[in-house]
Image (cartoon, rainbow, N blue to C red; front, side, top):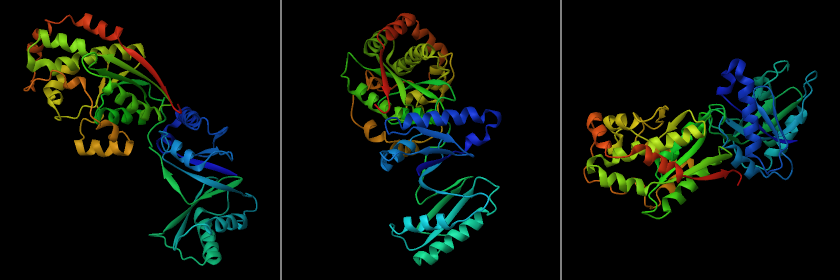
Length: 392
């Protein structure tokens, strides 16, 4: 029998709520493997088994599972029957040797885990027995410190599973166990990374993108949609709101002093995003802010921007530098899209010398020149919703 054996870390610490978290992870795995032909995903002892039909290709299963938040690691395995009363490793040894004949390696080691402690042989006993059989059968030496190949063995009640390729997942929590958050998604490098960090903590993400339309093209919207689609591979379904923000920006430019424009843009974006977040029953707002990176991200400006929101503002990247964020974007697969040129609304009408230490009392007086409720309503009325799905 061919299957995937899935391991998790944090879920094992959830006490009485553990079943809830495990059930959610099972549901997410089923969603990730939709269309592959998988019909059975079941919980075993501190692990999850996915039975793979013949039509499920290894490459697509690996690609789908490595995106599932909550999975620490997994491997695609072959199973061998195991008799708990009379443990005999002959069948396991023969299957492992037959599989290794097709692989090129000079040294190896065996790592075993015994899920059912009633098995008389310990994990170390199994490692020694299988290792000795491989040495004799293939004339290959063992290297415990630096092997070219590792044989992973899982011992359950009625079966033993083995594989030579363990694959890391993203870890974290299963999506859906931590409620929903609204993620402000620009076309840049930072915001997709911030969104994924909250997805990895189990949050369902609702994406909100502010476009400079009608003053600029739809280029930034197309980028935001591509980025949201990549992130949806870990969500299975997501909502993307696009807000044409150009007219609102123009009104801010006409009625307020230039140094305060950037802060006023961001305050208006937060107000509109919060209204959408409440509509989507989100409990927080997520931004890609990194402390001190640009004018709107100084301590003073972060403070005056954030005061307009009632919901908590989450800034997962606040202590990261640009190199760290860029490295994570590359791992996530969003970097190449993010660096494509576009007409970002945040760059429209940007003053040469923006205020970096905006005082709340001065900003409040400046903002009185704007009809804030009307502008928020205008943004909400023109919001365009797209529903993204994976597999799509």
